[in-house]
Length: 87
Image 1 (cartoon, one colour):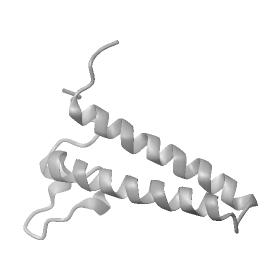
Image 2 (cartoon, helix red, strand yellow; image 1 turned 90 degrees about the vertical axis):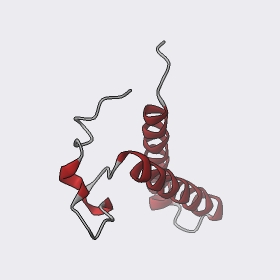
Image 3 (spheres, one colour; image 1 turned 135 degrees about the horizontal axis):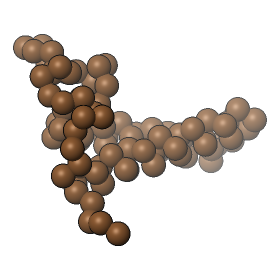
């Protein structure tokens, strides 16, 4: 198994949080007042937001809504997420 770069590890953590949020969403659809389910969702949402902020700072925005610069449109000045090499 190849050794993952920091960038790829960060992307995988974001993907894992995204998966956890989808699963929590499905659970909460049928258990909308479950405190444990709500806490689980909130925990993974906060973690994903933190990880995305780290990724954006180091590698640029993952989506157009994450462009945070008022001086330039960063989305087109760096490779798109699917064009970025995993190094």
